[in-house]
Length: 164
Image (tube, rainbow, N blue to C red; front, side, top):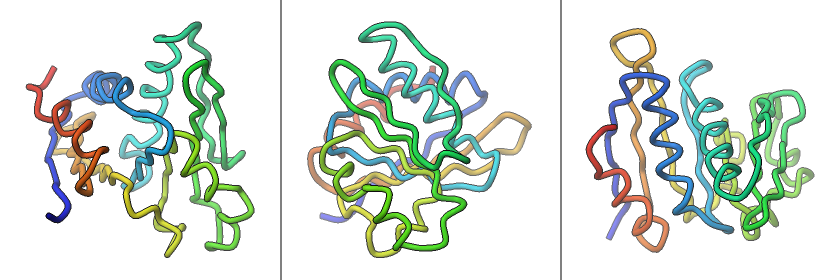
């Protein structure tokens, strides 16, 4: 069985946040979401909403800054460590190895913006979320491609729910 792609239309920033919050509880250590799309398409907003939803489930919600300049923001929650990574400014795979991503892919939930910078180091069991601008301001098209297996089995039911 090959990968499965689900198309989701997000009619607002609130819909993007709602989807992120719905996905947050089904994700766990060892899961990786590759966040694709042009600048401003909603990758960071999605990651921020997902991280804050996980925070809210276990304690106080903190500010979630973009990792654009720090490259990596790590959130140690009581039940899970989340790595939010922005690879836009990296030159190549060598730089990603220095960040320690190979270990994080196994031990943390990883949200990776600009994943093409990983080259051959892309985790094979990652889900890819491709954000694209919609027809109206604030709207987005999202294509979620999931490999077969456990992550697919956890994500697919959430993606099949009616729009909120």
